[in-house]
Image 1: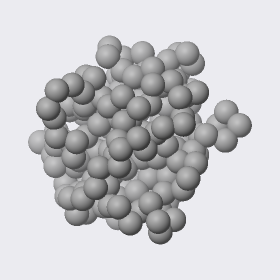
Image 2: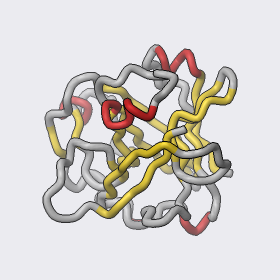
Image 3: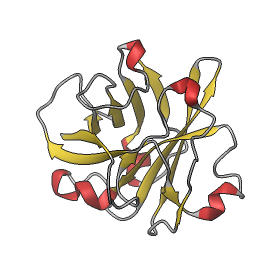
Image 4: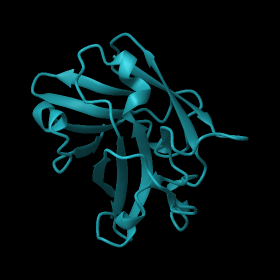
Length: 178
């Protein structure tokens, strides 16, 4: 199992690494070609090579990035998950400006990955459960986590079919808070 530890980004750091919130580093054309909508806010980017050594079952190819954007709709969140094999070429400053009602989603939080035991809570990735996999489990009550969803005291789950993940097809990712 792959755990996630976060730390508020400070000083000099590489904006093209795994992170929650702040400014995504992504293909610039996504802003104009409909890949990312005007109502989407940046949740996280995961640089696949950063957790390669912890993916013991080699569930996913370790090239490129996974991006998770969310759209808030009447208290619900709709995921927009994207994959890019190439190194991102553009840092999009102030991407989350205007979403202050969701908490501090403009501050960047760097992600570090580590091996962890199976546990029901905690922030982690690639948790297999039969035909389904939790792409990302986000526990806002973990140490150092951003404020997002902290008032719910619940865990957010991004889940999908294992075969879809292996094929890098993120069109059917579901989002649930429980």
